[in-house]
Amino acid sequence: MKLPQPTHANYSNLINDISRGRIKIPQFQRDFVWNIQKSAALLDSVIKGYPVGTFIFWATKDRLRSVRDLGNKALPPPKDGETVSFVLDGQ
Image 1 (cartoon, one colour):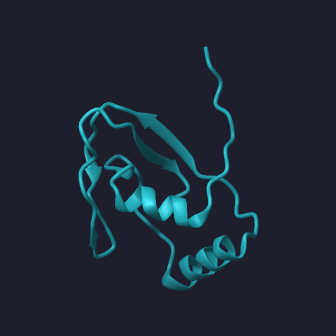
Image 2: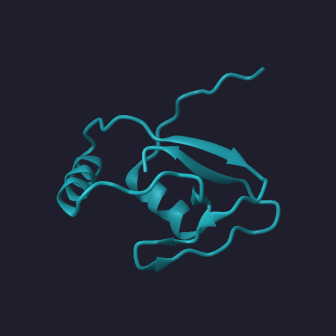
C-alpha cells in the first residue's frame, strides 16, 4: 500500500488547477461555513507564503458528482482520462 506523501503547491498553481477543472469540490463535502472576512484572511496568508495548514485531496480518474461552480465562477469539466483532485478537507 502506498502511503500519502505531503507536497507543496503555490497559490497560482492551485488557482490554475481549479480554473482548468483539475480540482473539484465533491458533492459529499460539507457546506462552506466561513464568512468573507475569514476567507479573505486565509487567502492573504496563502499569498504571503505563511503556513496555513493542509488541504487533503483525493486524486482519481473516476468521475464523481461534484460542485461544478466555485462562487460565481463556472468550472469546466475535466478532460477525458485526466486525473481530478477532489478536496476532502481544507475547503
